[in-house]
Length: 273
Image (tube, rainbow, N blue to C red; front, side, top):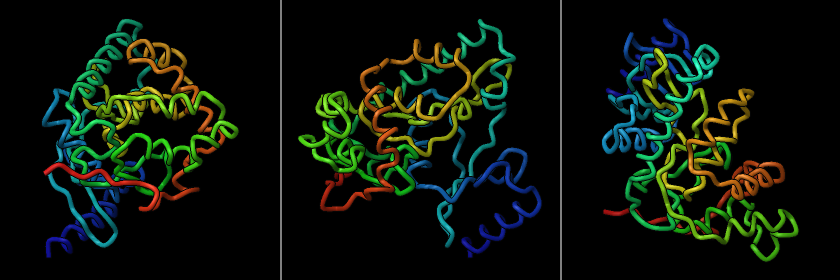
């Protein structure tokens, strides 16, 4: 009965309000429903909200119906940063990016449940990332398995001919596992009166190699040069990894859609009890 009532509620909200954006429906002045989406998104939001001071929309309920998984969450105050950036003073821009850098530092200070891991916040669910493809992937117990996916499962001894030496050097390097938002684009930063009111868009978040936040911040094109100038000075830089990723973006972007990972190729990370 609860499932039926939610489906009816969602239908009525779409009928009355329409969609604020694809997959995003207003159900009142202070609540929205997002979906269908991955369980890992709600997992990440609750994990970060409970363990940091980062402003994250509150998750009120989650729902699973025939069409998928939905998150009923707080509708936060403010506008997307991309809509207000040009109205901010230079000082406000610096203060805002410094605040963002502080939030990223908090994410990266969260203790990883295991070294060499690529997994959702609690390691129970698959991840999703537009950089990798449309299909969920992982979890992986080693960075090597994740890097293999990014190369389309081309072995290291053969990948140099396809991607060049920089990709190989980065894929054999040892990295820390750090919690990562993985989509720090301007549209996912909500701002009001020059201050960050919320970080949204946790769909891709999880445990990744330490460079993933920096490289993913460059994945979506942005025509605002001073944003990148400030962001690159605020975040830990991984220029070699960004160069390697750009090679992969150009030669084998979204490898999960071209070479879906199989259970034979990857070893799932074992969740902690």
